[in-house]
Image (tube, rainbow, N blue to C red):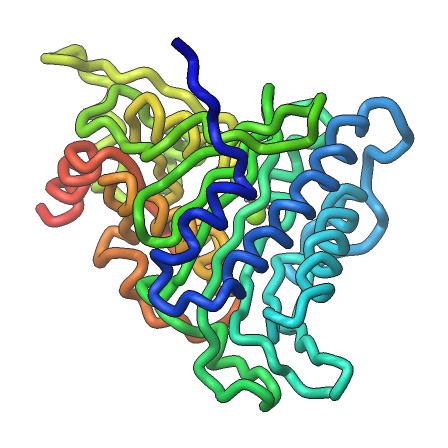
Amino acid sequence: MSHQKSTLGEFIIKNQSSFPYSSGELSSLLNALRLAAKVVNHEVNKAGLVDIFGDSGDVNVQGEHQQKLDVFANKTFIQSLKNRDIVCGIVSEENDEFITIEGQDKKSNGKYVVLMDPLDGSSNIDVNVSVGTIFSIFRRITPQGTPVEAKDFLQPGRKQVAAGYVVYGTSTMLVYTTGDGVNGFTLNPAIGSFYLSHPDMKFPKKGNIYSVNEGNYGHFPEPVKKYIKYCQQVEEDRPYSHRYIGSLVSDFHRNMIKGGIYLYPNSTVNKEGKLRLLYECNPIAFLTEQADGIATNGQQDIMDVIPTDIHERAAFYCGSSSMIKKLQEFIEN
Ligand code: AHM
Ligand code: MG
């Protein structure tokens, strides 16, 4: 017998009392993200119908060309967060500097900061491949009412209050954690509501998928090369399947459901790695750990890294615990 699945809105309210500092503000923040996700979803879905493909002409802080949808998603999430007096600052992949949010009294009264990649995997937009939004939420360190400072954003991932992503895929899902497991909600586009479709998501302990841009193999550190060869060996339960979409959110989402490992190593080309610590690695790491997986930069759990720059990059490996442990054996030997 089928039973009524709760909507994301109902779920947020129901779980509000379990937040350590329950005042409804985090719920309101999550609702702001939920609303923005629906707006962006609408725009992503009709991208093939209107002349929205292609570069907007601007180059972002990473030196990459912004796609029009990047710009749209960035504006939408920022506006939705600004509309509620809960967030005092935002870091976005698309903005060089952090954004300060002030209320009508010209004070930053919000309790939280949000760090986000509004449209990750944007090089996939014009070929109709899934893209995503990634977000990370911290309580501010500086007192409410004072201007937000860099240190409010430069907190280790361990301090995250909530994190999640939206995947604009074959169906659109919002997946998030507040430190009490991972729950996934699927958007019913006819009604415009997210429904709890994937409660308490967990990585299978073992997996048989490895996800890496293997074209860069020649640039990878030796232990990572050896691990990739290990994945390909015909032995025991191997070779593993290689699956790589090139959208972190989609690659992660698949691996969490089916069991797998995602690798984006540092390399001779990307010396620090490619992915951004604060709004790509940390939120995905929080979800990984909450789903019984492991997320590391090869030397330490990624959430223990103390950030020094809002746009810093990191080597990133995450996935099923037994697969990451195997990789670590190669790195340590
Ligand atoms: P982006 O933020 O510019 O979209 O880059 C991040 C994306 C990730 O989603 C993806 O995992 C990775 O870059 C793919 O990089 P590559 O094309 O080098 O394999
Ligand atoms: Mg990105």
